[in-house]
Length: 298
Image (spheres, rainbow, N blue to C red):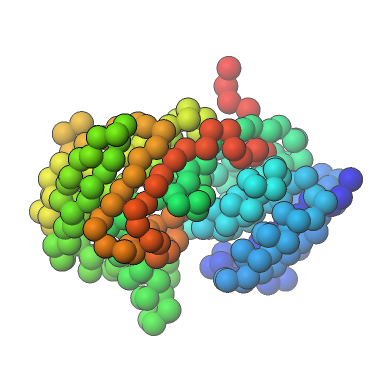
């Protein structure tokens, strides 16, 4: 059997050259698993994932944050490869929703156990996402965070906090047309959030998903627009008073189209951003991704 392909984000803040790579090799050696370790940085990750997808390996492991895993999964899906996950980022939402241990030894043990699940992925204009995609407020926050990290050398956490403050100081509503089941709805909103399966929006579980195989996109739009409406959501979340049914319009659906009356728009995918042509056509791909993860209870 061909060695497992392991792709590590060597430019990630948690990666330490000569230490992290040796920990990975040692962990797989203990499990008796042969690997081909790739250590791309930044923009090299996509090329490394594509090369791994063309290899004879049946399994491609992504080691990094949600952005890295998104890139690896995007190559694994069309190639019919199985994804292994080693969380090594700041937030690690995808691995937590899958129940993956948050340490190298635990994650490698899950990969070695070989228990496979088939989960859904979201897609917009042919672009895969494993967690969520959004337009409006959040992409602007991500762009500001990246600017602060690069220009001022801020950590990801502090840059994210400062970017949120900077972005929320401005009113930034935009008009969207959303097509659902052949009907068009117009809204003026600070953002539209589209999740791969349904998200729980409540204190202590913001962004968590109970299922990744329900075959639905979850769409959330704030009921109260403008800066005041966004701060209301933030404050109510902190105080544990958030009522999703009151604060958001939400629906679960298998596809939708968003038009913003401009030729291009900035879109966020799993913590990364990209400029895309409109309209944005979202759909769910049920069971499209084979992933190594603990079996669900029952």
